[in-house]
Image (cartoon, rainbow, N blue to C red; front, side, top):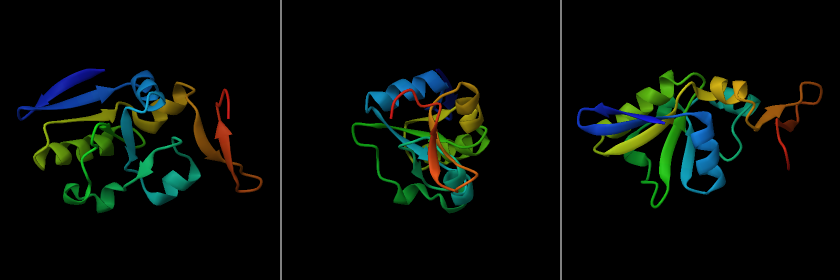
Length: 128
């Protein structure tokens, strides 16, 4: 992970290992800002969907004792959402650098779609 100053606030760029460890420890709320279609086709298990098109930081509650980590397909949309979150008055937020593409390239587990049946399947899962 590395951090960046954005107008006096902190934008953290997490890698896949950072996010996987924080999710396993129950320390984060992961928010997928891709489209509903992208999410339904494949997504990080446990990530909540809040598409960029409808993102309004006023309607997103604080993470409480958990950190918010945004992600998208490549890291571009999640960075935009993270910057909007900071501009709305919050001091710190994180996003997944490289997005879901990096997650898949790192062979992290996710929920995909069985193309033969259309059913959800676990991909790269060590255990279920």
